[in-house]
Length: 630
Image (tube, rainbow, N blue to C red; front, side, top):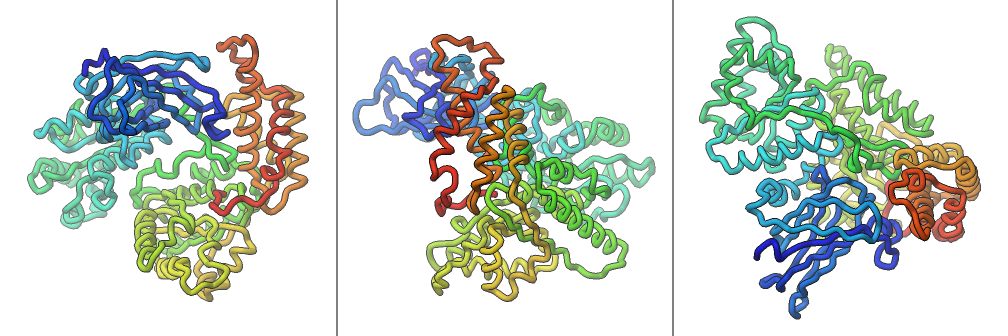
């Protein structure tokens, strides 16, 4: 089909009749327009990505047996506002990407914008992204590091050229700031090369070779069978041994022995220049086609402001640091980025003090062991989190992974969240299989089990497969050095009941932490930070009204009160929606008036309270048994 016969038109929509309330003002209407009906089409779908190539939303149309219409409408619902300046739209036919267009949205609601769709040959980079990168689990890790759009586009182009050039050298180089170059090589490049299989990656540092801390023969044996070798380039000693090692490394990179292995080097500009000066033959392996200069986002955009609903501050991913354990020890815990983020969270005074003590003790024991003052091989730091909903348990679990990774006690520091629904199978052997998969996924990081007390059925039915989860956990919890921290969380009284079901369970959790409910003042501070992050402004009277609503609601709280999550829901589902109704219902408003579109009035608070808080079920009722996240 000629692409001139196929177009799309797109507009922002504000319509509560076709969407859940939390998505009412995050809708996008897309119409696919064809001069002639599309033949041989059983399914069409629209996928829209942000300017940084992160999936925003998708919707699907399926053929019902009648004639295919020439106009097909899609309704896309996003968890965030459609406020980016630039989007990528893909049309998939029968499950495969078929057409593409870049588009910008009109700043107002209910105004269509039209764009012509392009054939694959006209946009090879975008089609390569849709076919190979967009569906991978490593691609979203570009977000927390905030790489520039220019770098992301360069990455897509170079990976496409590499995939289409059989004679291209497999090795790649990331040059830039230590942490982000590390993350770029360790997660994005290594993820692509290894087809997202962490078992086919190996991490090491160049100074392990140059200083003799790792023997050449042992290290090269470790390389065998790996798809990706991620190597950190460090400052080098000026001696003959180092020169010889570098020449051996250059020969190894050229050898047929590792023809199917990509060496992914990363380091600062200074260290890379020193490396190439010492070994010009290594420099010859890297050029503009396989070298990436890591740059950060030019300015914050919608992807940079994603917020954790339970956190008072934006939550960065736990895995932006590289997974090599040998070089991640943070000698000053107070300077640890994750520890600083923990201290910046609103409230949780007792938790912060207890967590700092636990980290200091873990680091103290580690340093004694390294000096052979402590011969114990026990490296277990499993934890219990006690607290009500919305007190930040999930957020802190992610920070635990980061902190223990930066101390060198976890090899990656990522966090895997799970609950009974994901762990307990439906038939004999199913639970065991699920547990193996979850444990493998959490290896090197934190396994966070929310509402852990639900693993044991109160009826004590002997056929309850939740007991198999406990048995599998007991095996894992008994390993002296598991390279994993298991954190179980939930209400304190129910967690105590769980521990009583098995005599050996409690002793395997040496660390226990209590999460206090937020005070009314702390809830108001969370609300202020949340609104500030979204660029909203409270008038003085609106601030007084919001404080009054929060104070009155907090005074009536019960055990099911949502704390920080309640504040988030009131703002997102109540306050901002009330403001949107007021502004959009005006007979005329200037869509470019930043003050109008940012200022929250007392009437918005009143309307939100009327619509949400006076509904007894929203405010104080027990949540449905589908699980929650702390």
